[in-house]
Length: 478
Image (tube, rainbow, N blue to C red):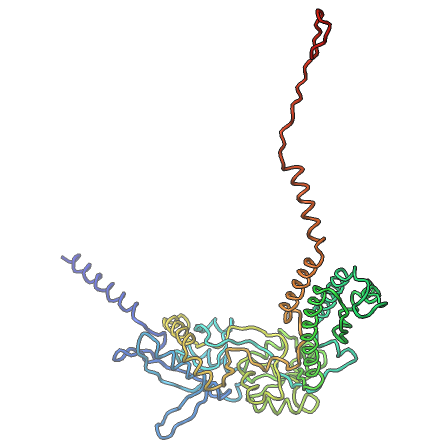
């Protein structure tokens, strides 16, 4: 009887334990289930870019009001969790004199003070040792923003810039091909019509194969060719030449007249070797990246707290107490370029990282739930609406036009590949039609070979009769 009672108690204990394990819980003293809701303590940073997290004390309601890009994403994620959540938002208690390691300090306090941290926290390998991160909800990476240089890059070879080298080479090849085709088709013409005594051979000689198509494109002459096929080829060539000349003129005009924006520094090596001062965001891991990855002298680094401070430092320049470049994560730089984009541009290689994510206590059961909800939000139209609300149409998840120079690009062969193909095929067909010997001679050779090796004739047998001699008559009978 005692054994049955013991087994029944043990059986019910296993059932209760299984139910508790399957129910969503949090690791921390403040997480508890009340009326079907999980009470979740949320820590947010006070200092930083207000577009990401903005904390304001509301005296009427005696609580903090938090807004910004990160908080809107968090609220959208909470609505997609498979359970109800009661949020208790608490601003971070990191003092200003400790702001140099603000993010690290907030995350390390999670194990005893909070269950989730929301803000512009980058997912880092060293941080994952004491917190669990969700999947990232925005892409990131470290780049630099520098002032642009206005002006026109002009030199003695500016006239060749409208076309790339492969396009110039293609023009020479097609011009030579057309000149050779016209020379072959016009080789038997002794004189031009209505111009007796003016031998056509003098105008179309092997020395003018390349010059003839170019001269006709610039200064066309009437009745310079006689045959219809030659005139057709010349007409197709003039069409190609007209398109190329118009494109060349338009692109050369833009190169000579439009203002071109070029970064003042192309990479971090130029800044480091030149001994320039550079800036970064206060409390960011970018300081370690600059020292360990880009090998900057720590004495050449200056911390700043906002985009307005970035702007003032870049306006002063490295020689006047400011900086020559600002290094920060791409979302902050795109936000800065949206405000001051007319004078600044992103440049240099990107130092990649995982991006922004929410941080939960280590081994939390909620990490997987939040990650699935983040994926649901990022794949919906709601994410685009949130990004457009704070960052405009050039959202932080896409490449910005501020990274690209406005200098005109050289036209390449790919832009005119179709027209070159039409010209080449038309010239080849005209050459085959005009010079029948080109295709008739192979046909005759093929017929001769076929008659020689493929035709079958039966061998003729010759019947021979040996003569006989009749001795009686004395006549030979054959």
